[in-house]
Length: 340
Image (cartoon, rainbow, N blue to C red):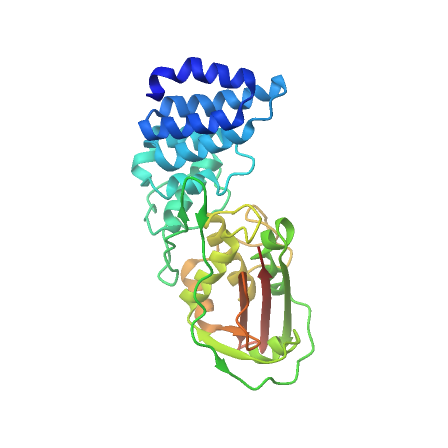
């Protein structure tokens, strides 16, 4: 068994800098439930960098397996190390995908990582409204609002993550109107921020526009050759925004469901005109964060949300949505795609 061989075997593999052997040892220890060995690999592989061995991938993989498969104490310690460089998902999300808050809470240190794990659990529907957090980087309510969808999250496995594009549903062919003239509005960047990882860490691209007019006129300003549309309710719209913001696209590192929820709130509040133009972060002084959930829910409900395409379903990762504010006569459209 791995437990009987772990220390001598690990010593030898570290001295040799044998990455393949370390990955096999992780598999053996996980199969045997020997989490102490996996933890040793995570901790000691990083120290080997000082000796010139580039075996940090074994440390990243060991911490991922601990967060995903090990008991809560081991999982929480992996989160607390926060040392992964290129993991397939943030360890806070990995751990929260398999452990309830009550199982992890006593093992998590105070600080931003503890808060992020809590927000990951809230994104999955857990009510933690009685919890007080220090150093909260997101500042969102610790329970889902009635207008927010719960996020099941992606299927996270030992080696890969399944995070498919939400089904588009049936879009209806619509006459493409004349394009309205674009106007400057902070909602344009808020929409593009949803897919910032796609465009900065992967091969994705995004365009967004704001016009005085309808949602269809906003889409027309992006120049598609045709137009199909489907009206969405606020929960679906917020869910799609949160999915995109959580995703890493084709090649980027996933940001996690907690960050996805934050970006969806931020974008919705911006489109609803609830954030001051000068307010550029949850720690800013220009406007309160977060907005009152009931007020934001009312504002989100007054906006009109649409999915659209040009008559052809995009391939790969995509988010093509339009938003209309009938009260102010503004509309926005976003086109974002990324491909493997």
